[in-house]
Length: 482
Image (cartoon, rainbow, N blue to C red; front, side, top):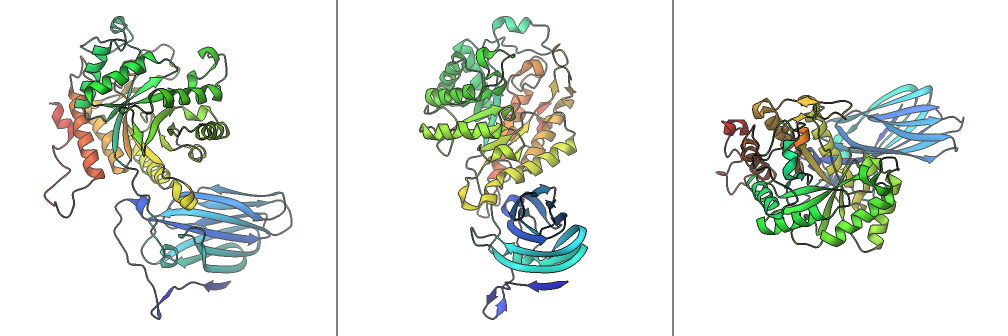
């Protein structure tokens, strides 16, 4: 094996060594690493074994037409059906590299073949620097690159997406007669109608008492409920947004018709035009925020067209997509999951940490050409749709006297989200409501207010100048339900 370590950055006659720092948020401790692998092997995997991979991309730099590059977990993979040499280029965003030591690499070659591996520090936009080069002929190659060479010029930081928000999903399909429906396990003691403005105002006033910034209203092309919500927001100091129901974007709203991206485009345009400039409509960076439920029902290519048409028309909405998939992040502005109630507590924790790092650092993969995306964590008090006869796979998630909700908030805050979304304010049929109810009183209103304060404090932590200030204002939320 031939080995050359390059770019020992000279400063005053000595190598510059990065000093170890403390990074509480892995999204603010990121390095961008590029590699080139040249080999005649038919299959090759190049893996970075150190740190946490937030994102990775692969492409063919030069080869015959039947060579392909892809990412498989940590591995950048070449598949080459020809007998000719091929070259692939790999790019990683890596968090939590150690301050010192070696970044470990592994190369697998099938069949055994010659290989040239070049490692680049890509922390500076459009200026990758070669820091390591390996040449060998084998079936498996292991080597380490000094971490200081990969960290130089960094760390790259996700930075802030602005004001931390707490938003709950709101449903406008309740009339006075709804509350007699036997499919409801719990009910509002107010027996309100979402079609009566004074009663909607009461709902919004309680949402403000719950510490919410905004209610995002389920929307499928009908405007009267949204007009009432906007009026209520004006009277209560709340903000309002929309949760567009992708599955309803069909001709005539009929299930037998396919989802139509043109209807989605028209709906987004209508929301921007009717409500986007209203001072009570939720914005981020001056852009009206629209949440899209089940965004994956429209493929990324169609979304790209929708957003291009929006910009061409002078509209600039910020689209929060309900999807954890990276393909949609290429064209939309943020990501959330409507509910995580089918996950175990450990799965929720891992999901939140993984998604938070991936979404909040996504723009760093593109250098300065991409705006920072927004990641919103979701919290729910529980879930029970077992009375809904049309549910194929009903689910019951016990509230556990509020302990489940506390655990959801703890997992959300630990992942340092930009926003927290509450599922839901009033989805009574799925029993995710947090508003005042006959079974729980206002326990979840008070709990949400306490957790919202904690979240905002954690995202804006006590400063050195104010060491007396603490985020532990009132103790565990479950204690406040007694």
